[in-house]
Image (cartoon, rainbow, N blue to C red):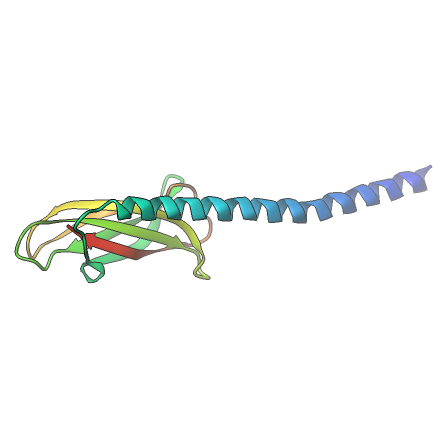
Length: 141
């Protein structure tokens, strides 16, 4: 009886462990799909900007930190033009391998000529590891 119970326990453990791989794979697929959906929604938001000019050179992303359960980064826009401008910025959060974890759109409004102004990009969800922030696209309008 003991031998049968031990064999059953071993089989159940093996099944549970092998099931974890497929559950983990499925969870990874869900997270990947959700990340792609968020990135797509962020891009759509950026596409709504009318008469925007590519301003990637005007914008920089600072280091990331945590605020509660979210990842944040200070984003700074420097206006090189002679009139006040608004900026709409796509910020990508990436893991150490460069994989996209999250994407957000940040608006920094009323940046005076020759001046800089900052805003905080905040992830949509909790990000693991040590993510970095990068400017994916920036529009001055």
